[in-house]
Structures are given as structure tokens and as C-alpha cells.
Image (cartoon, rainbow, N blue to C red; front, side, top):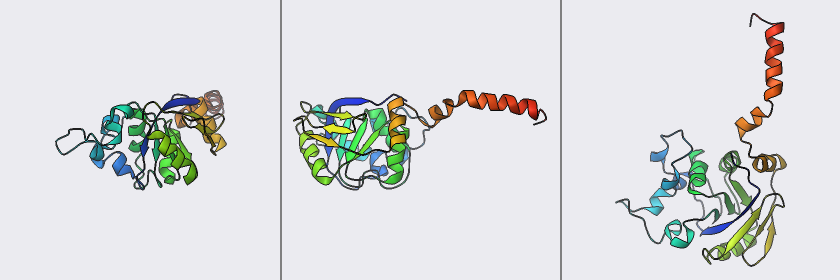
Length: 201
């Protein structure tokens, strides 16, 4: 997956609480095992009406937020079932960071495995960033993973905590497969030694 270092982008405000994974990507779109192609169905039931037409008032349908790369959300984002399709859909749409006061544990961990940075901040900080996001495409936030900071368009800086191992994986663009491939030489040496010591296996 792509390395995540420093992101400067448009932030979309989504102040709803308890946005669950079925809202992020409804169950009818879970048939695929591909990580691509789900962005068009992100928040499907909120983005489109019963005839499949865009609902103009939904934030990601507004012209100023169509290129959003950051989502500022309400409490308990990503709750509900543990579907990995939720971060797949966010990433395919173009969302690279989600800011909230809290996340569901499984969703939070799935984000890191799919190249998305979930950022937990105090409510006061999220409120400031939510208002900043409401300014539209002229207000760009900066998310610096190395420094562990989010900077508003007005220059206000908020620090966040992140697990050092998860941070390393995002900075280096390593998912579970990438982590395994880092040990490729050791694995090959083990297999070669095993073939000599136990050729019957």
C-alpha cells in the first residue's frame, strides 16, 4: 500500500454520531473481494435516492467536497459489523484520514491495514476542526503522521497519539503481506535449511 507521510487536503464535515459500517458501505456491496471499485457506493444510502440519483445536500455530493481526502466525523465512527469493505470503500473514494473522538476497535485497526489514518482527538479539538471543514474547499488541513499533528486552515495545531508499530507500518506503506515480505530472506533460509535437514517433509 502507499506510504502515508504528510497529507494536505480538503476535509469534509460529517458530524453524525454512531456512523456504522453498514452506513459506510451497505451490505449489498459486500459480494466483492476486490479492494477497488467500492468508492462509488461509499455512504450509498445517504448519497443516492431510490432512483440512484445523487442527493445534493449530502456532504460528499457537494462540489467543494468531492475531492475530500479527510473526514471529520462524530463519535463512535465505524461501529457495527467488522466488514473490512468499510475502509476499502473510504480509501477507494479518496479518504486517507478520518478524525473523530472515538472509533470502533475493529474498524480502527482495519484502517491502518488499508492505508487510512484514523485520528482520535478530544471533543474540543474535533469541534474546531469540524467548523474548519465547514469552510469548504478553500480550507485545507494538514495531517502530519511523522509529527503526529493535525493543523487547521487557520494554523491551529493539534497533537494526536498513535501506536508506534501502526505508525511505522503506515509510514513505510506496509500491510500484513508487506510485513511478511520484509522477512522473505529469513523465510527462504529457513525453508532451505528445512529441505536439507528434513528432506522427507
